[in-house]
Every structure is written in structure tokens, then in C-alpha cells.
Length: 342
Image (tube, rainbow, N blue to C red; front, side, top):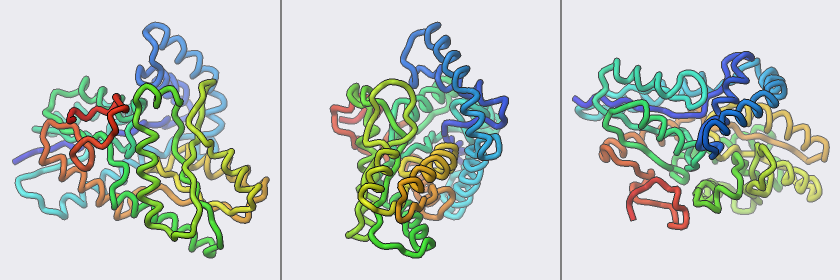
């Protein structure tokens, strides 16, 4: 009997106002987020977390003082376990464990729990469909450091049919609930990334473009759309166009918007504050004919089914790191792709 620990990785978030500053310190002290040697990275992380603490606390206060990411991931973990049990896979006992990168439960906590359960192997499934060094690579490195279990990993799964269906269903449902207004423009909003990272070989933008193409194919052909990026931090030049600039352009064009958080699979501060409050206020100030926000996939059936497919495929590739399709998907200029195959 294979006892497989399924490690669901995500960023994590503070579980109280007091946790905001140490969460931010952990985030910016990650070598995959700030590529500086120690002790300079820790010093800069301390400066940033101290400077941003009050602002970040105020934003978390708007959603109850804590991040909803861990309870959202718990629901996904339970739904995934149930989906796998329903598939009745032979010679398999599977259990999900949550590994948050920058707050509790940490990756080391998940590794200890998996070992205590008696896992014989692990599948690391980062809940980031689009690979980036700051997210997926950091999660995979943390797991390798924390556990000696034989491990398979999924490095990217940005354009799968079921993931696309989950996003398309959310967009269409939100549109219909708003009365099916005419002539919408869909903003596919992804978390931003410095252009420098892409120039150095990070495939994140490529994966975001694949995600948008897959979802767009399931929407009405006459709808307009654009991929844009949110959550910029710091002075570097980031991927564009920015989501706020696209909202202003929609105002100039007198176009109503449907916003899809295409790079997020759970509701958290970037969706509940940035999209639902900050950008909604900007949209109403234009004013736009309408501003509709499609929810993240959460525990939608197509999305959970997509996760189960990823696990089942990884079961057939023990000890390998692979895309959802197995072969390498990234063009070779993206040297940070972790896939070993040519």
C-alpha cells in the first residue's frame, strides 16, 4: 500500500494583527523573493516589514484582521481528499497536508505531520498554477529542505481544461448574476512580477498568457479581454499593463468590466481588498457602466477535479518534477523552469 502525503503549498498569511509584521518579515527574508545575501536580506526584510506593518494591518482589518488563506486551503484540502477517495485508486492511501511558506502551518510542520502519519512518499502540489521563482520555486526548495520523503512535484499547470473551466464558469456566473450586461471587457488580473525576473528566465508571464488563452476560449467570442497585473511593490519596473491603469482605460472607453483573478485559486487579501475594495472604488470613480468581480476557483468542482487529475498524474511519475502535461512546456529562454527534460 502506497501512503502518499499530498502537500498543498501556498504563501500563507497572518492569522492575527500581531502576526502581520513577522509574516511580512518572513516573506521578504525569502531568498526567492529578495535575492540578496545575508545579513543584508534580513536587514532589508526588517526595514520593509516595519515600514509596511501599519498599512498592512489596516488592510487586513478590512477583512476581519486576518488572512482567510489557511481556512480556504483547508476546504480545498478536504475537497481534494474526498475527490481522490471517490476515484478508488488501487493500492493507495492519500492524505493532504498544508504547507504555507511564510506563516503557520510552515512547510516543516507539514513535513513532520506527513512523517508522523507514516507517509512512504509525497506529492508536492503548489497552489500556484503559473510557475514563478518567488512562489513555486520557493515552495519546492522549502519542501526539499524539510523532508527526505521520495517526492514527485508539479511545477506548473497553467492551462489545463478543468482549471480554465472553473475560471470561465465563475466569470459567466458573475456576469449573469449582474444581469448579463452588454459589451463587457474581461480583465484577467494576475499578481505582478518585476520585469527583471522575466528577463532573467522566469516563465511566469508566459504561464499567465497560457492561462488567459485557455479561459478566453470558453467565453463569448465578441467579448474584449486583457491580461493585466496587480500588487506592485517597490521601485522596480513591473510587468504591465497594471490593473489600475486598465480600469482607468475602461473608464475612458466607457466599457464595463468583469475582473477575473486568473493567477489566484483562493480568496485572500489581494482579491478581497485590492480587487473588491480598492479597485472597485477606482472603478466607481470613473465611473464604469459596471464592475463585476468573478470569484477565485475555491472549491468549485472543476477546480478540485483538476487538482485530483494532477495528483493522479504525479502518482505515475514518482520522484519527478513535471508540468501538468508531463513534458517541459516552457520555451528554453525561460531558464528558471525547473523541468529537467529537454
